[in-house]
Length: 471
Image (cartoon, rainbow, N blue to C red; front, side, top):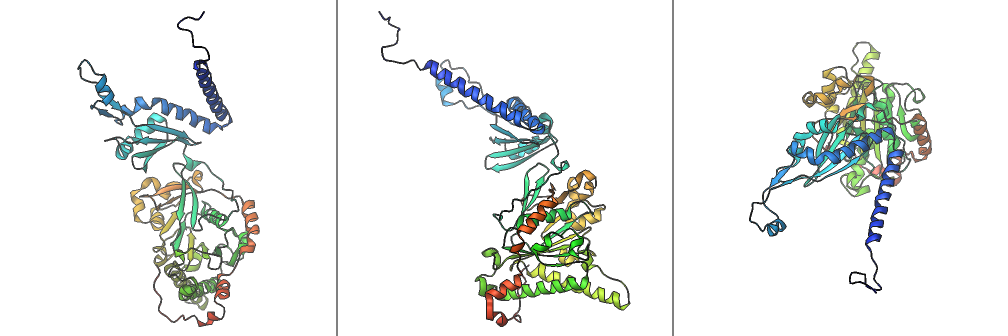
């Protein structure tokens, strides 16, 4: 005979099942985390432990750093529950924190509260670095009402990295992926509508490697064509671009006369493009529709640029000829930088010290993107990055002379104020050579491509019309 508390016939007690299910979920979650921890490398394991400490200590740390607020207004539920009429104790509100990790440290996202926003988190950043045992902490706004706190335990700038090109056509033709900044965050530059880039730095600190990354990433696209003037060598096989020459429609060495011919050809291409762009593309600027296989972005790399612009002193005929060639080279490259943007010409100038004698100021100062690897003097740093670099001593390239910082550059980033330092990766020579060989069939002369489009109309292009300055 059943008692009054016995379950009714035909019913099922779900309590044990719910408990078993909860235990299974807990065990599964624990196993997943243990496996993830054991499979991680030593650096990532440290970051996992660091992230756990950050989560567990946040509710105690936040009030200490004045990252909390006191809410004296009782909630509706508290008011209903208050039957004795005593004052209700104010609540302390702490921003919700979600923490993830990577090999270098932690990334935390926090929700803002009244009087606890971006400014308050930024003021607390040095103290967060101490509490979280980080080398440095940066706070930025992720979206309205939320901030991102990036803490790095290890300095990403001190660890050399490698880039392994995929050989795939880039999603964005003019996006230049540079590397990672001092918080291990990816850094990229949008070169859309950019006429020129300057790259400076001491020999052996990463200038050519930086350009090699661009070639590796952009070479798979038929919408990009390359030309190069390398002032370090007399022939391509002697230098850093020996493998890449097969992916270039033109290459010259340190001969000023040969370089002059190349620059003349590119200026002629620029003039024909300017005169025919509306006829061929139906727009004023190539960037309105983007580069294509028929109208590619033309990238001219001028490495050791001082070779082609240096002022030659002397009264003998040979020296006078060199001086005249250098002056004309400067005039021709100025034309490309100032007028080539809208028709799809990008000039990248690399030199050791980008002072006015290496890259004339009328060229250098109209290049909106500038990077500098290690420099020996403040004068060289200012020439490369502008007077404002004096106000950012931590990012000044004169502090990058230690061999540890080979591959580290300073730049004025487009998306944030001031200057930032970036670690640029090394592309293994074998991979670059393989990619150059695979993409060699994509090489085409942009002038021949334009001739193919215009056909008989090529001779009808009127170059006598006045040109608008596209800078």
